[in-house]
Length: 154
Image (cartoon, rainbow, N blue to C red; front, side, top):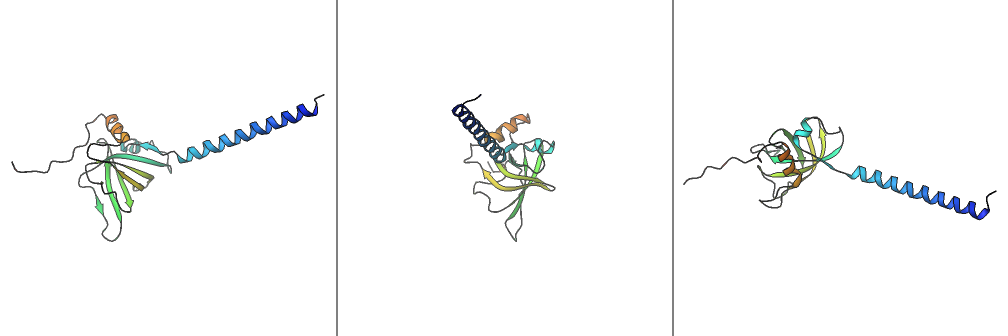
């Protein structure tokens, strides 16, 4: 027969193991919900995104694709990795560094008519490109998107 002190230690150990297990499980669930996966436009078009999931998409803003609604802060633009293009819809003020022909990352969800962004992040300076965007462009086996030259006199 088991002594009372040994039985009490076994119960305490069991409670501790159960408590730690529950804490780890809750932590993993919280982290899983907060992970924002990155996808390129090619991956989105190929259907690799889980419907309804919150994720980041990155690429280059296509020249001439920015369309603004004059009545509110609605803006839409096309995002490309040089292989595929996805239309991004955003409501709000775009970052000061946002412009056509540059790399951006947007955070949001896929909808019927494109990607609905909650946040748009632009590059820091002319030499910086978000690492995910750079990798997506390399994965597309293409040269980085180059904006059309603005004709200038010699």
